[in-house]
Each structure stands twice: as structure tokens, then as C-alpha cells.
Image 1 (cartoon, one colour):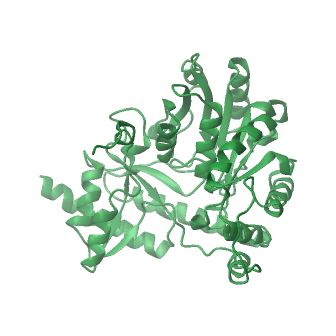
Image 2 (image 1 turned 90 degrees about the vertical axis):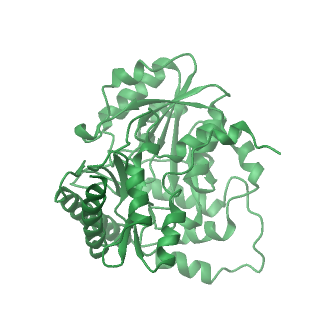
Length: 399
């Protein structure tokens, strides 16, 4: 029996596909510093943990397909108080993580064969979401040398065809840390209006903007409300990645109504985790303030440390908690495997995510890695030492 050509067309996750090598290293007694995945070591809000321990119901029952009403109300309040926009509960659809919200957006807006424009490098799982929806990604390339700023907007407009249904942005960006300016957003929105297409913006890292920069939500542009979808999640904001609770937000009621048809296919998002997410929104403001300050400290540390390693170049991210680094190697994936399979420094090594899978264009990112600076600075220091020594060993062996 054979498998489908469709599934053969999916790429293995560059974030996770080296996991067997990491497991084998750990079985040999090697400590592995995981810089490959955005799993923070920061504690979730105590309010969320207590809510799980004190879950009040005797049955973990099905919830509503569009999400727990109290959680939707909490999101409405959060957007009013923290984002400066007014939405209603009818604009909010709770999803199984932000990932499902992106997939649902593509399936709701696009027919098979349609196209979505995405700046690259981009969150690699979007490639799989597009394959699931039978949608083609059309990429526009941003460069490390330009600190991954958005290329000239005319470059995006030149990619729009009769098959284009949407532009998909991520701000602050995973994997580059770029934050879209109000001027960029407004120009892209006008472009979407001119060509009668949608704009989807993944804003799950909105709290994490550094160097005094502020964040502008796409929901602030009410005049374009009918063509805007906002993606949200508790995963990164509250360090609750495993809860798998996200949201699709749009003032376009037709989009919400039609997307609900997809939501019914998985019946509901996780019940207990929605209960915990509701509690997380009651955490004091100091929680997010301290988390932001910690990530900015880590950003400063990792950028300085990487710049001290001969041959390594990286952009300075303005937000989120990722960066793209260029290594003095020809094949970053081969090097990442070497670090796990063949190398350790004093019993320790590093797991990296090869960046080639974060690009749609071929032959880009081959010498780059994505680094998630989600570990404390002591661990980041040890990881960077491992990286420095590993590069010496790898290039010495290659020569």
C-alpha cells in the first residue's frame, strides 16, 4: 500500500526533524541546549496553573465550537485595555492554537490553487498549512543585510495576480523579529483594498517589542475591517505553548460565520486549557512587563554573544524571541546534525533549527539557522560557547 502524493509534498519540520539526533545525544549523557524551538523556560501565570488544579467541573465536557464565552469576553476586554481596539465577542473565534487559526483562514479565504503572498523567511509551519489548504505560497524575500526589513512594497504588489486571495504577515516576526510600522501596514492595507484581497496578520508576539518600539495592531484600521483577519494565541504571551488555545479575530462576520463550519469538524478547542487561559488573562500587568524585560535582556545577550563568534553574522531583532544567524558553514543542517551526533563540549551541545525551511525560495537560508533565545542568560552563555567550539571543530574537520 502506498501513501498519497499530497503528504509526500509536505516538508518535515526544520524545527523538530533533528529531534532523533537530540534524543540520541541525551541517551549518551549529553546535555542539549534547545535553541531550535520557541518553548520558553519562563513560568506560566500562577493564575493559570491554579485554575487547572482547581478545575471546578466533574466532567470535562465538550465546549462550544466557537469557544468558551467567558474566554471570548476576556479577549474583548484585553483588546480594549491593552491593544486599544474595541471588538465584540462575535468577532472572536477560539481555535486550537494560533496554528489552527492560520489554517482556518487559508481554508476559508482560498480555493485550491489560489495564492497567498508571504514575506520570507516566514514561520515554517505556514508551508504545511498552505499544503493542507491546497494553497500556493508566493514569497517576497527580506535580507539579513537589511535587518530583514520588508522589501519595497512595490515588490509585493508585483506578485499579486488573479489567483491572489491574501497577504499573510507576522508581526513581530518569527523568525526575524521584524515589526511592521504603521506606515507599512497602512500601505499594505490600501494595496489589499485596491486589489480586493484580504490581509492576515499573526500578532501572537505583540507584547514583545524592544528598544522602546511600540506595536500597532492591524485591528486599529477599522476602515479596512472587512478584509482583515488577526491571529492571536496564549502560547507565547503567557508561556502556555502546550495549552493549544488561540483565536481568529475579524470584524467581517461572514468570515467568522463561514470559518465556524471548519471549527465544528474538531468539535471544540481544549476545554480545561480554555479555562486556564481565561485565568491567565487575570494575571497582573507586572507579569507581562517582567517577561518582556527578560526577553529584551536575553536578546541583548545573544546578539552580543553571537557577534563575538568568528564568522557568525546575525540581524538585531526588534521583537518576538527569535533571530536568524548566518554561520561560517556551507550547510547549516549538516552542521546542526554534527553538533548533536558528533560533538560535545564538556558534555554539552546545542540544537539549532536550519533556516532553509523558513524560506520558500530555493537555495536561500542554506548557511543560516533560526535561534530561539528562550533560555536564561546563563544557559545562553553555555550554548554560545558550545556553538563557538562546535564551529571550530566542524570547520577543522571539514578542512
